[in-house]
Length: 112
Image (cartoon, rainbow, N blue to C red; front, side, top):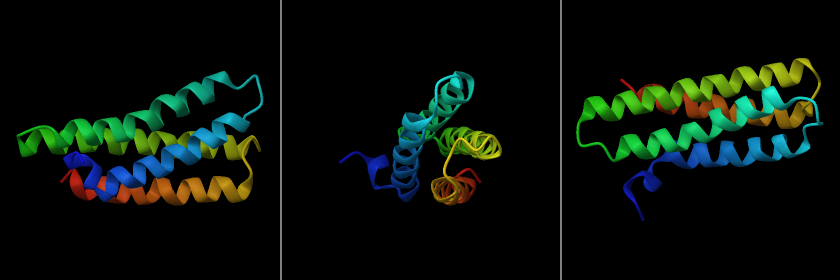
């Protein structure tokens, strides 16, 4: 097991990504801009956590965790837009926002 795989934030990010991938699969055609944005942002979260965990300097780890946090917040905004357009089921959207908020909270602490 690699170091980053033991991090709760990484595991949360994977759980969040899995749910977002399900949301993306169910989006109707014609919303590629939001789909692409969510896909890129949700992929960025665990990747930046992993990259930061591999850095020897604490300052670098915090910077990558801050980037991951920003990507998670971007996901939250995309989920809000999907909800406004009624493109995601309310229960699924709420679950995704809860996971997103949990990731952001953990990453906020890690970025300090």
